[in-house]
Image (tube, rainbow, N blue to C red):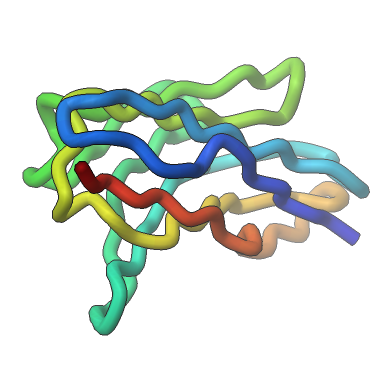
Length: 120
């Protein structure tokens, strides 16, 4: 079994910053693509950022110049540094990862989500 556990969400004022963390644990042979998605209230889930196993970065246009995704492979952890936050960034943020619990088998996993609220 594999678990993704997120932390770092909370309430922040417009223009502020937060850093989200997501740690993978359990039966992990290897980690592949990891990313962050978000779901604003009343809207569909959308992709925020992806980091591949070889370090390629993909960002949504709405966050490209403000958010930074990174990973620490030794800790099986992916991060999302969020700067210059706007009220429209308010959402539940979900961690996502492609994980091989053993060689030749790869599955996609989701975290439980963490609330980010940007408000004055």
